Amino acid sequence: MNKADFELVKKSLMEVKDFQDGKLDLQPIKRRKVQVEPPEKFDSESIKSIRQTTSLSQSGLADILGISVKTVQAWEADRSNPLGPAARILAILRDEPGFMKKLGIK
Image 1 (cartoon, rainbow, N blue to C red):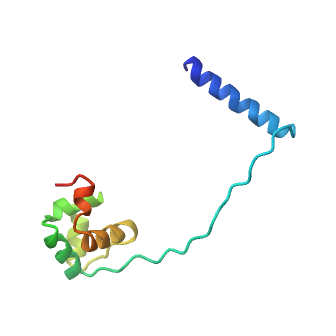
Image 2: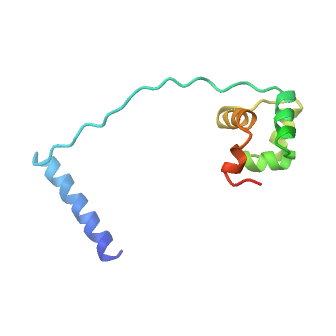
Image 3: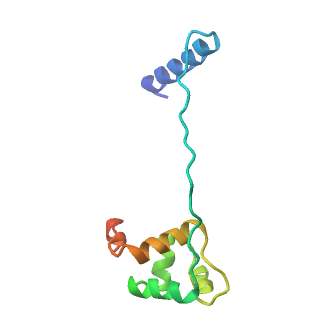
């Protein structure tokens, strides 16, 4: 640990002690509740269409989503469906043609 790191840890521990001794008043954390719509459901034909429109192979789509090719194949064979983040990214790929370019995907 270098001197700067040590000083940061020391300062943090002193703040904890001051808080426990009542010498330091912390600001409350502001939170807000958000409403999140459930992700869209995609069938095999819509997944194939998105993949073909974006000129991606099954392997390319799998790489972008961080999943296996077998998962993409299962989606396209109607053995399973994309959930959560994968479904949200599929919707973005469908609705925003320039999305892949923004991410540096060629």
